[in-house]
Image 1 (tube, rainbow, N blue to C red):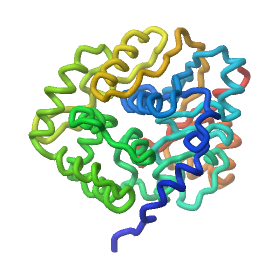
Image 2: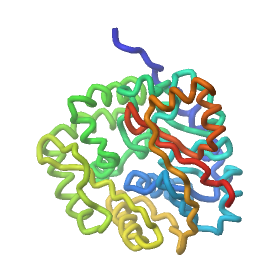
Image 3: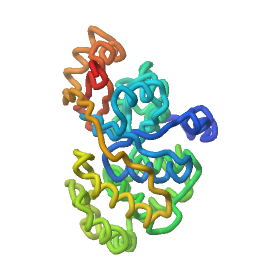
Length: 325
């Protein structure tokens, strides 16, 4: 028997219940992830709400564009929206899409302001093979009832988080269809799901998007998974030192604007580093440790700032990032 998950939810209720979207004036700016998906979200949100980028986080280090004595109180009081990030802090609103629960019934205080499709649908680590298979930008566009303005913009959006490869893959295509048809119930995503498995889509992606991206120093074809027709791969455009790679990031923002027509968010002139303690922990070790404490207790005792399950057998945990700063 196939597993049954929550059906589609009321999108308007989700948006109305998420303060950054229902009260955009309460948000001073964004903390974004460190890749193409995050910048796509930032450009769309700049066009929609006028927010600028105030910092960036790679799940190891947080680079803030304001002095820490100013930035940290703004962040923890909910004035900064974390975009394409799953932060574990009760005061920080975040828009993410990783698996962030160990069990379906986990009640975790740090997720009170999380808008995450896996969390909403009840997809925990136990149901890992059913995890959300698209990018944060797909989730964001669906939430705000929008869609790509052109076919080229749509190709760029399907490149985010290698979503088009997931939609082609024998291992993930059924799961992608389930999310699109049964939960998101999106016509444009369903049309895209059919289109990305064609040679015509890959040729469009290669000629209209990758030929432009390849001139950016952040854009490199990475990852073992490749597309079915032309052997295309990742191109996630990640950075690790935003102070040193600023010009490449700004150039990437300009490419996104060129292809989507959205707006370029402000980007900090300089950054202050808030280092975290990142650990890659086997899930077997986590389960052993959670016998003494609940998962919520484990996260609290270890002063966890963020965590994700990138693979079935691993949890990445970042600790003490805001401690002693």
